[in-house]
Each structure stands twice: as structure tokens, then as C-alpha cells.
Length: 403
Image (cartoon, rainbow, N blue to C red):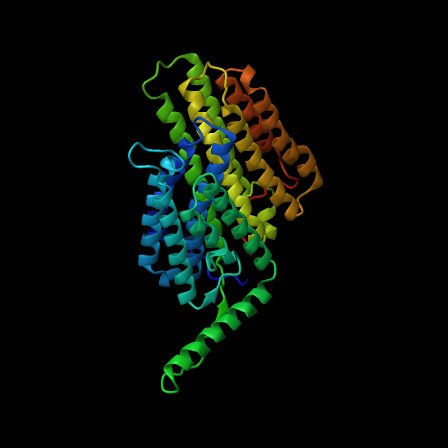
């Protein structure tokens, strides 16, 4: 795609981001007492919020000053409903039941609204086609009439269809554009047929959307800042009202250091945390799934930091260590995939990227034998290993610009 003129996030977009702060906090709370089923459901719910945010972010990126405030506010309210319903998804409330239906309705409404906004603009979103075509919405519709746990399996299927469809179509944008044009022509022909010769009009021109890479990179980076802010909030809230003894201080310092390390990697190399990637750029079908995985990983790690800060001397049991270490491993694994896709140096991949994926899992395996603050301190050392890397020729900065 061609680059448009550089611009920055608008006040409307920043206002829209406020609701994501709440949604991420609500989703993180689901990992306070993790099970494998809870972690899987967290990933599905997180994708739902992320996909609505991504759809409207891509829409505002393409439309710029012509972005409809109404479309953004509908999405904002819908994410707020999803955030309010998220803690009670799959949890029975006495006399009420679950809030599954509210989450489904809000998600479907937001996705359809964003899709209609993009279609009305006359552009085709080849960067992430699921934003314009609800490839994965059918299982969500079907889940309305299905009871758990099959309902949640259908949600997972919807996520899988979304990702597979978007990756497959965005790898061949010309074919996708041609198919969308044929569909537009068929719709115009049916309208002319129903309206007669008097109401006939030339077919509407349908073109591929032109992304503004700098703006999109900034927006994706702001989302990373949101989830890092959630990590800070988890530690601060857990520390409030406690007796501030040395173990809590160690947990807080190590946790803050871990957050700063992740922020520094984003500042130094762009949201991919890969040296030199900003100069080459990445395809959207690689960058966007990686962005989902990296931010979900940070959110999971943030949830673990909150648990540790609440009881820093206790050994981590019940899967909290795996959530925290696994979340950090997912973050670094997505970064390693981005580095591989961008043909990063072999030394960086083998000596820095891959060890940073394996080490958090080793820490997670040993987390039941260590006090919580010790687990966080070890994870900090893993992050510092990545921070310590220095590319040849000095600093290599730059944000990822999905093409």
C-alpha cells in the first residue's frame, strides 16, 4: 500500500482509547485465579475487544478527517458493555445467569457497525479483511442458541476463522479487491433492476484502502502503552492498604523494572521490540496478529504482578506463575516471529530472542518453589537480557509500519 501523509492520533481516537483501559483491566482480573479453561476464555474475550478496537482504528486510519464520530462512539459504548460483561461471562449470577448474551450482542453490534462504516467509505480493507467482512461472526451468532461449554468453543472457532481469513486474504490483496469489486457490481445490478432505468446509476468505484503507516504504528504503540499502564495499576492497587515490608518493596521494584523494560524495548525498537524492523516494515498479516499476542501477553503478566504484590512472600500456586511467565514468553515469542519475518540478524534471533522465550517458561516451572517477589525478579532478569542487546552501528530505533 502507498503511504499517506503523516498524522497523529486525534482527540476522538484518544477518547475512544479510554474504554480500552477499562476493558483490559476487567479482562486481567479473570486471570487472578487461573485455570486452563479460564486462560483460553481470556484469550477469546481479549481477541473480541482487540478486534473491535483494531477494526475502528483501521477505519479511522483510512478515513482520517472524514471519520464519523458516531461510528467511533458506537464502538466505544459497545466495548464498555463488553468490559462490564466480561467478569461474568461463564460465571452464574444468582437469579440472573451469566452475562454471555450481553457480551455477544455488544461484540456483534460493534463488528457490524465498523464493517458498515468501512463499506460506506467505498474502500476495501486489504490489511485485515475481517474488519470489513464478518468471516468469524457466524459462530458468534450461532452461540446465542447454544449452551456452555459448546458456546465458548464456537467463540474460539469464530476467532480462528477471523484470523485465518484475514491472513489468507491479505496475502493476496489483488484477488481480494477483485472479488469485492465483483460483489459491489452485483449489488449495483440488483439495485438497478429493482429501481428501473430511471433510478439506474453508474457502479460505485471500489478501491483498496490506503493506510497511513506512521499513524497506524502510533496507534498500535498506544495500545501497548495502555496494557503497560494496566500492569502499573495492578501493582499499585495491590500494594494499597498493606504493610510495606521489604518483600513488597522487592516485588514492587522488580515489577516496575519489568514494566519499564518492556516499555523501553517499545521505545527503542518500535512495538515489535526487534532491532531494525522499522526500516524494513512488516506486512499487516504478520504485524497485527503479533500485536494481539504481545499485548495479550503483557496483560497476562500484569495480572500475575497484581497477585504477587498482594502476597509477595508466598509461593505462587494455582497457575499464577505460569500465567505470568507464559505471558512474558508469548510477548517475546511474538517479537521473535516478527524478527524472523523481518530477517533480523541470526545472532539476535539465536542468542537474544529465543532465550528470552524459553527462560520465562523455566521460571514459571520453578515458580511454586520460590516466593512471588523472587519470580518477578527472575522475569526482570530475562527482560533485561533483551534490553542489554546493542546492535552493530549503535542504536536502531523505529516503529513498525504495517504495509
